[in-house]
Length: 409
Image (cartoon, rainbow, N blue to C red):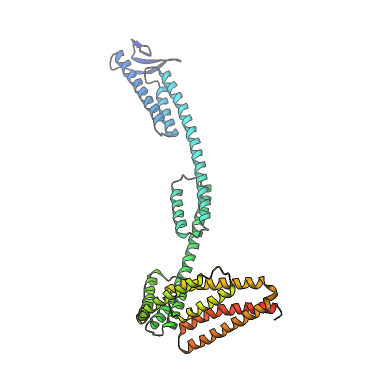
């Protein structure tokens, strides 16, 4: 008979293990000595110790599921309860019980974690849906389209919710994307139609521009080219594949015409440059009349300057607005001084108004005669210039007549 603290072998070869509930039969051993029998079943106990240790490590350090962990625990518990090993089986039961508690704690933690992740995923998806519905109303087609594609990628990276909630949110998300796509498609369809209309309009403008490119009727043709340019801008853009070609043809036709005109006008450039210098000197002389002190003297001096101004020919086109603007500024200042003087000397205003009206009427009549003469001579540019001046003088005459009428005249 042989024994150790946890088991013994009797004379018949039966092996026992000592437990809290008394001795339990482990098995029968007939092949060797009692010590060998105890050593064999002690090794089986050590095997259980190793397996339990490995399971404890897996539970603590891996993502082993609670279900698989419990299955492994149950399997080991069956081996412990079968009493086929010699050793401290009660200690193994304690370790398995503790392991069950650990698995249960891990199960609850994972359940809470999944609930938290699900809640976070719900909030994230609801935020994506809200943003998608806002983007569905956007007219920033490129930016909104790119953002919606980004939202889809974000959605795919989020965990699924319960089927009902996930399907409802996805339906709203998908509907928002479809609504945006439908609006964008309608917008670009309309844009395509507008560009086709623009192409037809611009082809007509190109045809007319090319037909005019050989004209020597400089004034009317240049004016028509300006009108064609305004119509071109108002037509909008054609399709990209047509726009550049149409523009090159349109611009090329104008270049042909204006190059020919520039060649004809080249001889006049020197004269116009000299005219500009003279008009700048007159503008400087006129500006010295400001601020207006002696109105009568200023008016007479300006009239003298203006008569000399009118006797000078054309100036370069690009310099004309600036130099004419200087003269117009002086003229407006004298006119304002006249109006102020008229209001200041109200008792004599009627007589002054009558005199001013007569002067303006004479100026208007003179300008009309000059316009007729310019037109008779075929000088359209001068006629147009005089016409603009006539409009200003006529407006002043109308205002003077209105004032004279207020005085009973």
